[in-house]
Length: 362
Image 1 (cartoon, rainbow, N blue to C red):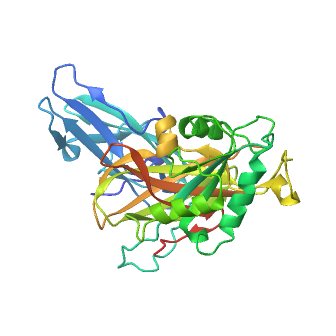
Image 2: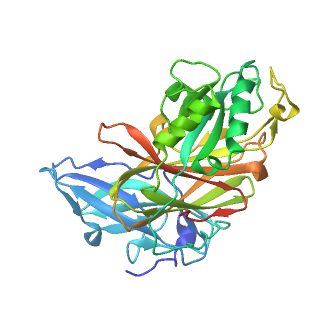
Image 3: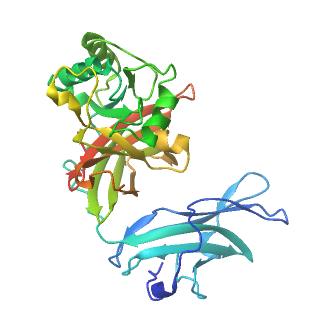
């Protein structure tokens, strides 16, 4: 298929939506127009690939992309193929026409500043290191929360456990807390069901342990020798926006979800009940979660079934609030899936500071 870049300056953004369905009033089935990337580099090489699916009245899905015409908003001529590149930064909207039927609209943003993923240190390997997810529910006016802070500090200083998890501080107790965020409130309401503080959840479950030996015991029981997929990240700050270029490498075929969270370090806010000066400085604080609703923000956007040996690429972005320090931010990527009981469980996680990159870990 031919690349298309000649008429990009005529394209304009008409609808901010990357998925959806358009029903056929004649009963011919349902069209779904998809794009594999919401962001591409504005380098004339990086590609967004489109696909148009038709689900017929018998429930079968057909790829009808070759029979469709794909249009960029503001340009009357269709693309020469089903891929899009750009040398110009901007937001571009696309829709497809199939047998006189219009699809939903998808959006692609072309930007400068998206960093390349780091080199894979072991391309032939699929024996990925496993990182659990520990979420600390806390707040600066919680007088007992320093006890949990002491526990987590001791855990992080234990070399036998430090590499087995990533830690998120979800400040949702009091809005006067400089680390407080709406994302933290959303997360705490979902997984801290009893509303107790301090509270520690493992892999987005509601488990709570109050002493370090119990926490280590839980990690010993649930940490895996190898993860089902690996995660690579490159995070960059461009103006007031953070871009996360994400790579996934799959060891086991499954249906996966991808969650992307933004954390911030070095937030100074006085902590009630503090027993040491370091407890007034808060790290790994949840600022924002990517996604359109609670489920996608916490547990991730559904990517469908990814096959063993497959690699998948995605770019997420966050607008940095004036009250945040973008240079102190980190991107946390969480890969989840449904287990046999239908419950969402964490498969793996990876963390990358802004201005840095995190390669696949084996």
